[in-house]
Image 1 (cartoon, one colour):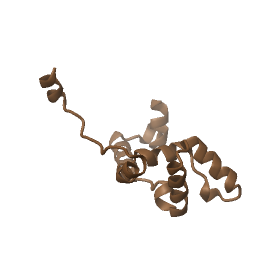
Image 2 (cartoon, rainbow, N blue to C red; image 1 turned 45 degrees about the vertical axis):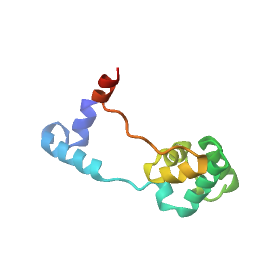
Image 3 (tube, rainbow, N blue to C red; image 1 turned 120 degrees about the vertical axis):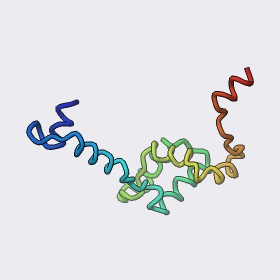
Image 4 (cartoon, rainbow, N blue to C red; image 1 turned 90 degrees about the vertical axis):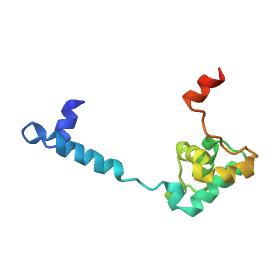
Length: 115
């Protein structure tokens, strides 16, 4: 693992821990847009599958089957699951599935007081 880190950041002769850390921090800041956020048509197809109470695996399989030549309409089941737990859509799923709104987690101090 360490040899990969050194090789990725200049090799034995040119490795700089600070430069490697700076590159790691910059890479962490780059947030890649999720496929469902970029493609409205795909988002709507996944949301429709969720409304019909399909599992994320069923949604992924169904999209691949219905759109065999359209790579843009492919989604992994992990991406579909991400849509389910996405906080920005929590209100939508509360309405669709009748879920109560999320409550904040109790702090450890609150747990001590209760017990």
